[in-house]
Image (cartoon, rainbow, N blue to C red):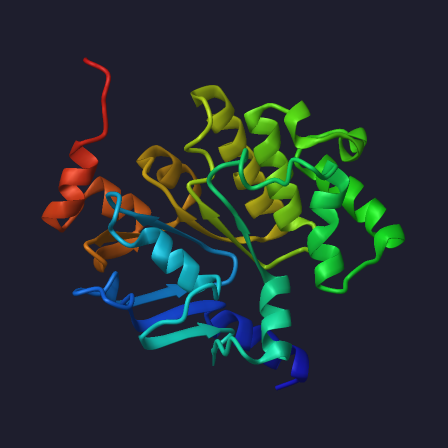
Length: 266
């Protein structure tokens, strides 16, 4: 087998991110926040983490981002255990895995112009300097539907939906392989929410992004994610193809989640 074919075979068989029997307990806590969680994120695919508040979704996202260290089990990146003290691995990881946070109002520094905010990953990862970052920033802004002159303005000059587009531009400017999204549309009105969901779907298809998303909104999950994992009290109670999990749930907790979605009277 040629090296190219070997690489393609590796990409096909090796998950880009993986949790293997992961648990996390905070100091002084009587019970773990998450326990015995195993999840696989394959390149080019999408996974939703759903459940009630306090189920452990955001904690799992922090583990996948390398922002927290599990007290048991292993987090893997490209098949290798994620070592937070390995600078070379973490540089590759930070370039390959980026995040969009829930609140576009608090995730953008109001004192900096949009161009500097979007360029920050390029500079911190050593991809570009101030001069060479400018065209990459303009391209990223255009990709999310914002004009290039947005780079000269401040976050407060934009609407909530536009700010979330800025956050997505910042997360995708360094061409990551994986985008982790923590409730990316929950702070937006319904019309804007639809537009941001459409943008994420477009980026996923055109850029080949792998998407992991935390969401309470099952309609967003059904639109964007091929697989869904349902969490209850820190553990995964059900996971599989989204159409099956949401359309014909096997676990009582999943059925309660699905039944709790408001429906228009017939």
